[in-house]
Image (tube, rainbow, N blue to C red; front, side, top):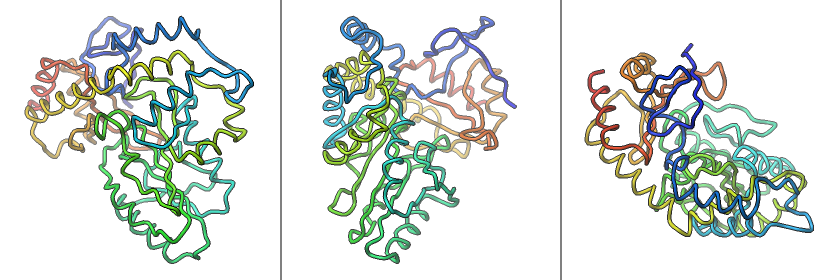
Length: 355
C-alpha cells in the first residue's frame, strides 16, 4: 500500500507535508490552478460580503437568490448548452439525473469504467474498450423494439486511467428510438474544447436523442458544486423534482465568483496557460510507453508503481491509490496544471528521463 501524507495547506505548485518537508506537487484535479488564483479569490471575497457563507434553503422556496440563475445562464453560454442547473456537487448532479431516469421504463447501457455518479440501481459493470461498447450499444438499440426507451451512460474521457473517447461515434446512435444520452464531463469541463468549454456541443441532439451532461465544478473550475446541462424542458423538469427541491445548494458566494470568472475570462486565460505548459512538457518528454495520456490533456497515468516511488525520492509527489473501489488496481497519476512554472516542468522531465 502507498504511504499517505497529511498537509495543512492547499497544494499549489508545491506542497508542504505536516513534517515540514516540501515537494513539487504534480497531482490532484485543480487543472486550471483556481485554488490559488488571486483574481478568483478576490471575486470570492466579494461574493461572501454580498451573499454570506451559505444558503441552506431550497432553491424552489418563495425567496430565491438570483445569483444561482445568473451563474447558470453564464455556464450554459460557456458550454453552448440551452440551459444549466447548478447543484451541490458533481456526484449529486449525476445521481439526480439518474433518479429521474429510473422513473422511466427504460433499458440502461453503462460504458466501461463509467463514473459512480452515473451508476443507477441496476448498474452492471461493462468490460472491454469504449469504442467496442458504443458499437455493441448501437446494435442492441437497433435490435430492440421501436417503442423501447434507452438510457446510455458514459464519461467524456477515461478517468482515473486516461483514455480518449471518440464522441463522434455517439452520433451513430439510432434516431428512430427514444434515447437519453447521459455524459459525465467532470474531467473535461474547463480543459477540453475551445477555452475549456467541455464536450456538450459535440453530442447529438435530435427529436429522439436527448443529451444531458453532468459535471463536477470542483475540478478545473474550482467551485465546490455541480452542474447539469440540457434542453430548457429537461432542466425545468429536473428543477421540479423532489430531489432538487429538497436539497440545499452550494454556497452562493462561489457561484458569484463563477459568474465573475467567466465574464472576466479568468478561466479562459488559465486554460491558455495550461495548454502552454502541456505543449512545453511534451517537447521535454517525448511520447513513450511509460504513460497513458491524451494530447493537450493534463493527466498522465502509469501502472508502474515504482515510478511513484522514484518521483517521491526525487522530491516530486504524485498520487497512487486504488480508485474508485479499494479493490481496483492502483494508478500512478501525474497532473500538470496552469500554475506550474517552466522550472517545475524542467525538473519533472529530468527525473522522468532518468527513470
